[in-house]
Image 1 (tube, rainbow, N blue to C red):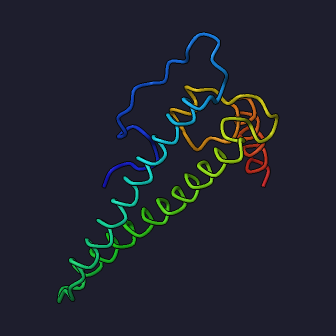
Image 2 (tube, helix red, strand yellow):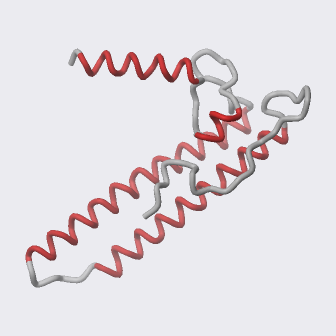
Length: 145
């Protein structure tokens, strides 16, 4: 199964803004909507393949070791599917943010997230500074638990 948590498999040309182009212009929003929709379509295809795989491979195996291996493979496939489902929800949220005019801006401080960061992670909701700060706080919390 492919690594569906990144946009590495998606083919797109990085966006080059026009001189004096406003951030999150219609053309930029269209660029990111296209990336998000392709990514969602890919994830849904992966989900369908996972479902087919489990249905096709679900046979009672007489050997207990073979059955245990098969169950472990199914568990891994289902965990992957769960991550994909959560990612599809994030993609849908990003598409909704485009409609409301919030896409591309940090939820914590309101600054521009940036085109390159959004191309690397189209569902990003924090600028790199706020994301770094959030991760530092998270490490401190887990470090003292």
